[in-house]
Length: 195
Length: 195
DNA sequence: TTCATTAGATACTACTTAGTATGTTTTTCA
DNA sequence: TGAAAAACATACTAAGTAGTATCTAATGAA
Image (tube, rainbow over all chains, first blue to last red; front, side):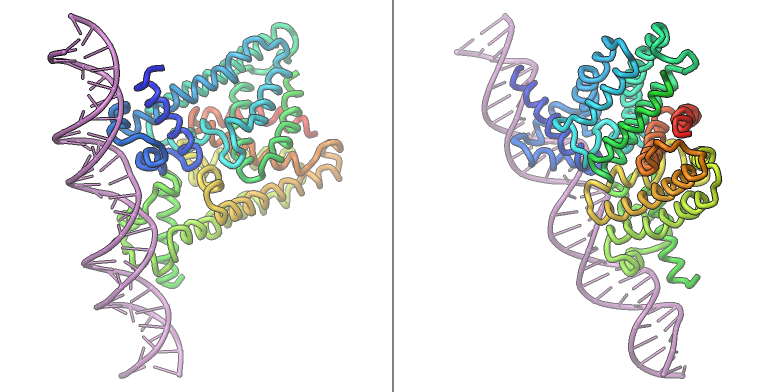
């Protein structure tokens, strides 16, 4: 990676960290800069404004991670019920990218920025829908090979699963990691209804 | 209501409105005051600081509403499965207190403030737990009168139901009211697993 | 090597922010 | 009715805010 590219990456990385904790609106550019060895000149060279940086955060950070960890793995799943359960369990088990206290960066951004900014809304919607679509395809394949109940609607189920995950991240902020286990146990009851 | 009491109430009401849209941290005291006929002197007479006002918002606004609309009605429910479904459906149908775009004020506050401020965390946790406990009791009664499966754990199920609601509010911000219908259909599948 | 472009540094601006200091008006109740 | 307390109003402060203007340093192709 070139030096300039690395600077841009570092700014995004630090922004990502701080925004994950404090939220987008309440993380100031000065906050970001004073927590690393970069000046305002560099920031506004790489980004037109704060919004531009925020949107880059989604496309360059959130989306690739979601694609690698969540979307792509779903394509090679044979049993959708087990596969989707495992996906969720792994996601909630991940303590490298997530801290139960601060929830999920993507879910947080949806909560905060989706209603306030159409550009954020679109990017977050596109990203979320791509995940939901991968789950949907997975369930549709499951219907074809008889692993999933014929009466269920894969698109509905996929959206519900994504929404359930978001809720788990919210409740986790209040109840801590213990709730993740609770969630998974109950999630199994729902998934059983799909088989 | 006395005049001073009314002033305090008006400040909270306006704060509630603005915070519902922009979030707690990003709603400034000046924002609130300039949108109504009240001055800074009045604000800081009624509230020690911004945090004090924010906490009052929970105890004086969010909590009473939650108690009247969600907690108390649950005590007179005979069939828990149907009762809990109806509670959720009514909640998601309510367009007076809620706008799908901005989600649920309580869920929003949990997302934003729970990780950042222990006082907020405690109040929000207490409030959420009271709702979950009401659901739990409802399910326990259902187990006793045979309307709910003996193998299910009422506390787990209650927390899952609350968490599911929070998720629905999050996903609603992205997909609009149509998702509420989707959610309810899938929620039924889960509830069926409890009976 | 030169020189234009890229990348970054520094100092500023105009505005917003929570909170305070100090005033005035309105209530309350003896 | 009069004075003390409650309920506000106004003007301020110090720190923070996104963004700009203008400079300097590095880089890369001719």
